[in-house]
Image: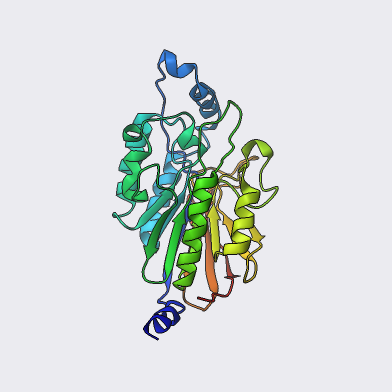
Length: 310
């Protein structure tokens, strides 16, 4: 009886506000050694020369100020924080993230640019342990926000061949994810899956896709989740994934630091409110206005979440 009441209480919760940002590409001018030039980093350096006028530091400053103004309960960052996977970038990113939110109020997962080449944990992702709260061998993580929300972070980033930006989860991570989804669902929590690469079929080209996305979609169809958040795509997306209790919304935010251009929709972030209404999420899109030089409201809408049955 006590356990039943606990699970019933899990279905109701005080509203929680999440901020979803992605693909920050924090500015960093690389000084590549000769050995580093004979790697994928050199290709990224050439790409950065073309894109550094688009990934603007003033937009990043405005993003941080806008997040402080809206004061979300928790910030979610879905990858591509760096550009070249250089140790100096991981240090710089840690300083930027520390200034953005206190410990325990930010969760991140890496993107393909955060894993261009293999980097020792102490010089790479280990510097972000404050926001993953694990080492590289323990993915997925589970971060609980309040009593009613479980943020489940996946690592889809891995070094790939030149000109590829694919991701992969692997069977071990998928198996752990399945157990986590069932456990968190049984506890009545809203399960929000975080990863960098899109999950929906056809969201990006094969060159940039999640190679085991079909296995992840099948897992979600059986185990369920209430929401999936990701980045990586250049345009905002809202897809529906099959779930056991109805469609699972899959929401993408494009780069939160890019100027609008022919290839990018332009910087935006999503303010997501959960718990204000049962089985619904309220979404506010904040986009960068070139004319106003600030983030402004773009659109508000509600998402129907799958009904929870603990």
